[in-house]
Image (cartoon, rainbow over all chains, first blue to last red; front, top):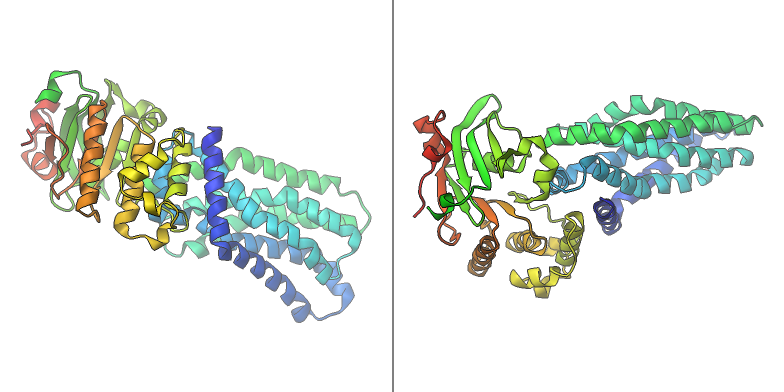
Length: 222
Length: 229
């Protein structure tokens, strides 16, 4: 089971590295969306600083959505999904492997870019740590909930539009607590409660989403 | 029928399939002993691919049962998946991966070692192109990769959907050799095809359209077998 898990993670990472443009596109999208805000809102430092946490988190959510529709779509189209369904390991474990590979290629770059984007928005330096910690605890939930949406949208026309519509309402708690952590840090308050709630959201997603996504994949193949 | 003389390992009883509310086939039955082979034939839309997906457990039958060693496979689909290799129209070969990488990850997924990979690639004439990404290979060569994966990580039941599509004469020879060797080792092969493939004698054919038309769905599975040439 561990071998099968690692086989899927290894294959997906290799594919992502070979086709680096997909992962890069999500990252560039993230940077562009966040960079538009100073242009649109104006350079008044107070206004940007106040909204910096929300803007960075919304940008991260949208960038994560961009990479989700490819999570199972290619496997669905080229027959690779049958390989996963007929593997000796439980499908839930293999879904988790795909989520991990997705997080490493989409969530981690977003996490690493976020302090720089905070700087762009005049975010207070004392809030950076809360931003990065919140991203580290919250982005796994984006990959996991996203996998359910991506699996449900298989076979649908315009899956690329459907996936964000399915997933974004479900990841609102991640946005709320992520922004709360940044604002608490900026105001000098305790960041532990929102960070713990982010961790709880990711753990709940870890417990539920592989099963839901696996059920949706079986349905898509039948 | 030599296959029927011994204990059947894979059997289907009164199998029916519906797609989109329409019955594709019904009353399909067969029994295959170790070393047996079945060619599912019929015109386009007769349900050859659907039969293989039912046998793989990827879809649920509308009626009837599939038995492995006398036990219904629906009771433990994961155990069934572990003993079969399914090759559909789409091979699942990723354009960005080389043949060697494709076989290596599949072997790990299936819990097999890496030692059989080079031999399997050589068997399908891919040893010189093992390090070329599949996007630069032809459809026939990608099919050779998927077939080599079957040989590299053996399993008792092969379900092959039109495996000869895109293969040249050499590739077809290699496929026929591989199926014959698989059967000599006690493996079972179910092949959906309308092109004649030498499965190695003796093998059975199942004409899905004819079986459905005769409506012998209530009969015993043995009644529905047609002898191969």
